[in-house]
Amino acid sequence: MILLDPDRVELSNLGRQVLYTDRDLDQWKVDAAERALRERFPALEVDSFVGRLDASNVDEWFQRADVVIDGTDDPMAKFLINDQAQALGVPAVLGGIARFHGLVMAVAGDHGPCYRCLFETPPLADEAQTCAEAGVLGPLAGMVGHLQAQRALGLIAGDTAAHTGFVTTIDALKGRIRDIPLPQATECIA
Image (cartoon, rainbow, N blue to C red; front, side, top):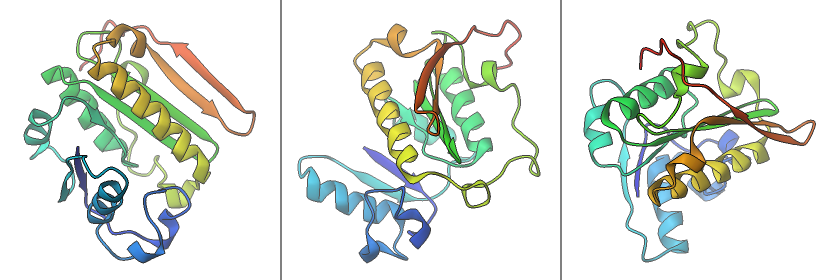
C-alpha cells in the first residue's frame, strides 16, 4: 500500500478519518496512517510519502499502482486521477462527500464510462466548496471509503465489469444508496 498526502492531522479530521486519534494531531497524515495500519496489520507493507498528487508527478505514482483510490477533497485531483487512469489503463476508484451526500465511481480504462462522462470539466475555483465550507457528515466518509475499498478489491481481482459502468450515490438524510447506470459519453475527452 502506498499513501500520498500533503497534510497534517487536524482536530477537524478526527470525526471522519478513523485511523487518527488525538495523539496524531499535527503529525503528517501519512505517517500517522502508516503507524495505525502497521499496528493493526503487521504483515501489511506500507510506504508513505508526504506530497501532493499533481501533473508533475502523476505518471510516477500511477506506474507504482495496481489500483488508485482517491481520497482527496480537491476536484482538480479527481479529474487528474481519472484522466491518468484512462490514459494508462490503471483502474481508479473515485469518491467524494459533501454535507449529507456521497458519490463513488470506479473507472478502468476502456471498460465503460469515466468521471468526465459524469462531469465533463472541473468546476471553477469559486464554484467548488471545501469540506470545511460545505460541511460533511463524518460517518458518510466511512461509507464512501468502504465502497471504494470494495470496488478496488473487485478491480484487483479482475471483476471489472461488475464494478464499472455506474455511479453510486448516497443520500444519508434519506438513507438511500443507489447505483445509477452511466453511459460512456461519445465525445468524452478522456
